[in-house]
Image (cartoon, rainbow, N blue to C red; front, side, top):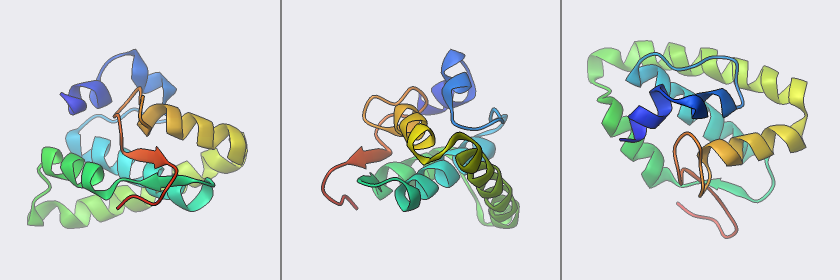
Length: 118
């Protein structure tokens, strides 16, 4: 169900990034890159690692896909950093939290605010 939200629907337009995921692997790369950079760049935001792991399992990333996934992650992280620089930290962080936070429009609950969550 989460991937249905990630891969389809109007919520995709709210992701703080120019690309819309086209496969489960792309969706996972989008979520991972965005949320990890959000944790690094946005004060008070943490990644809920269990939620991110659940997305990875849903994407069914196999050993044969690891090299492809690593390249997608590098590419996506570069795009996310460019978007962060273009939007400014405050606006970008708000968008990332809106997409992946507790009320996430793309995938709920990957990002949290407050005390560290692992």
